[in-house]
Image (cartoon, rainbow, N blue to C red; front, top):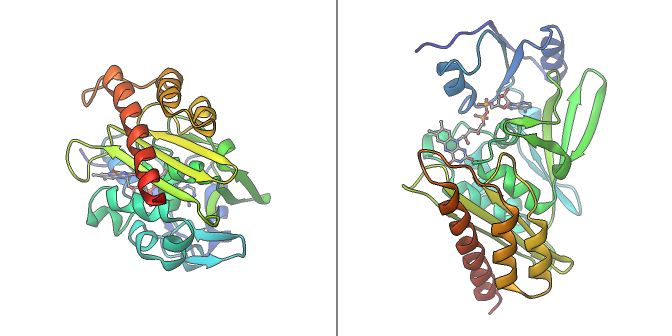
Length: 277
Ligand SMILES: Cc1cc2nc3c(=O)[nH]c(=O)nc-3n(C[C@H](O)[C@H](O)[C@H](O)COP(=O)(O)OP(=O)(O)OC[C@H]3O[C@@H](n4cnc5c(N)ncnc54)[C@H](O)[C@@H]3O)c2cc1C
């Protein structure tokens, strides 16, 4: 099936992109890497929108050191996230995620901002930035604002972004001395979306746990986090299985996803123990 598009405009700069979005009465879509939007258009899940192409806005690309945080431009491609020295040193969870996202062709075009704005509960980056406690930077016709990752995700493919706003960057706290960041997931084949996944960040202040593919949005697994903080891994596994509400679909049943979520949390904690040794 062919995509149905309501027009195409290449933005000259960020302001121009926001003007284009604002002029379309909610009938415009940002086009970044196109790796989720174009398939959705081909399946007619998105039709008739003006495509505002931001892919050449170099000011939205790259990683900078901001002191206690690193700032990742929203147009930074998956492949560049994976090999960036600042990310590998200060937020290795994101680099680990890149190793399991899709295939090389998709990682060469897909952007971290696109993956976060798309808010697919099966995607790795949304769960990672929530586990890391990132802050998102957004710009729209009324200026700029920041949103915590906790407040950004509203539901299945739904975020706090207004139709005329653009996600410009993501600030990620630098890992503390001794902090450990782990991602574990299960896929049918290499490069597939995960049937289930878990991110665990262990800091001096406690554990942060988020899940992939077990609900309609990325969320902190707070009951499991409390049990891990108390040193109770068995309790954390039980708590995690109780607090998630996984879907059943053609890839896996809810009960399988619930079971595997607990297995993945155990694997993540075993990896953390191994990294400590
Ligand atoms: C076959 C296949 C397998 C895949 N497997 C995986 C996988 O295993 N794991 C995974 O995480 N992902 C996977 N993906 C998705 C891939 O990672 C996408 O690249 C990513 O989700 C979207 O990034 P993009 O830059 O291509 O965004 P686009 O497709 O251009 O946009 C996606 C959505 O976000 C909006 N958007 C994009 N950028 C911004 C912005 N800066 N501000 C506001 N809104 C914006 C768009 O309007 C659109 O609604 C897969 C994709 C394909 C096609």
